Image (cartoon, one colour):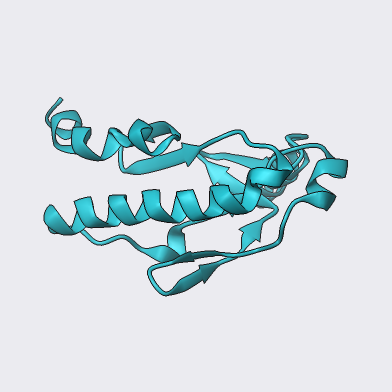
Length: 129
C-alpha cells in the first residue's frame, strides 16, 4: 500500500495520452496508432519517459535507459511497414526489439508466443540436464 502511494505520481501518465501498466517496480506505457502516426508516437513516448525520469530524479531515483525497451506489435505485414527509427532517450538511442520479457512471459512482435515457448523449452531442458 505504501509503495502504491509512493508511485501514484508516476502512474498518472494518462495525461501524456498513453495507457499505463505498473507492477511493483516495472512500468509500461503503450498506445495504439496508425502507421502514419508512428513517428509522432515515438516523440510523444520520449516526452512521457522524460516525465518519468524527472519524477524519479525528484524522488532520488534513476532511470536506466539500458533497461528501457521499445517494441512494435502487429501483423507481419504491418511490422514490415513500421519504422525502424530509434527512440532517443536521455542521450541513448533505443532501437525497437523483436521480443520483450514482461513479468516472465516473452512477448514477440506478432504475438505468436513462439519466443516464449522456445524460452520455456530451453529452461526445461536446462533443468532436466
